[in-house]
Amino acid sequence: MTGLAAGGGAEPARGPAAEPREHPWLSTGRLSRAARVAAYTLCVWAIWIGVSLILLGPGQGFWVISSPGFALAVLAVPPVFIAVVAAALQRWLTQFVPFTQSLLFGGATYVAAVLAAAVTSLVAAIGAEPCPPGDACAPGVWFDIGVAAFMFLPAILIAGIGYGLALASVTARGTQAFVGALAATLLVAVAVAVTAIAPLIGGGYGATGQPPGSVWE
Image (cartoon, rainbow, N blue to C red; front, side, top):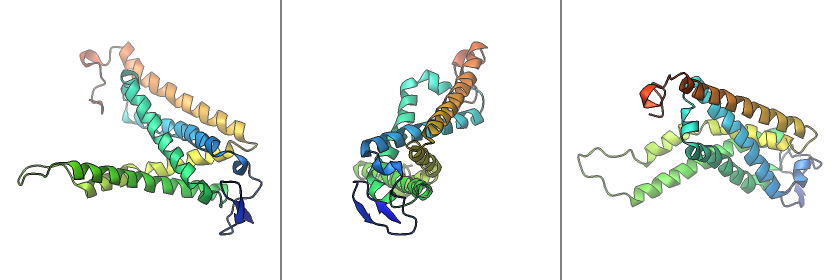
């Protein structure tokens, strides 16, 4: 088999898992690929957040309606980051079959996120003042990297599924992928809204205006 580079030129495959030449993804523009990855990753990411809030208990979706700007930033930044990673890796990824691409992309996104957190922590540490002896100081760079490595583990699944849906969106099953992702996202969004608003209607938040034991307090 042969694989096609993202730029459109033919090149020899590097392994037996090269993506078939006729796959529609290869004829899709770079900007369109990135946009599709961002859109479908947004759906998967929103579902992940919504299900997590529901599992945390009633009212944990309160921050969505109380801080829409913060909620929008939380929803938008990861998909944009993942789309940038996808655009950067297209020449390499398109040498493999779609399923392998999704697996590799999930792992690559995780590594990129941890590296980004490491660089950010290192820059912050360089610009910080030295900690006086005997004082309680913030954890070091290695601690931050360890926390990021643990917290970003879901990125493997989220990015992999989002990328797989983006690949499917340009095939004959594209409509099914779009409708399924959109329906699931809307269903979870409605569930989060209901769990957040219902206590407000019933006065369950009391004088504080927040759910008891909220993780956002």
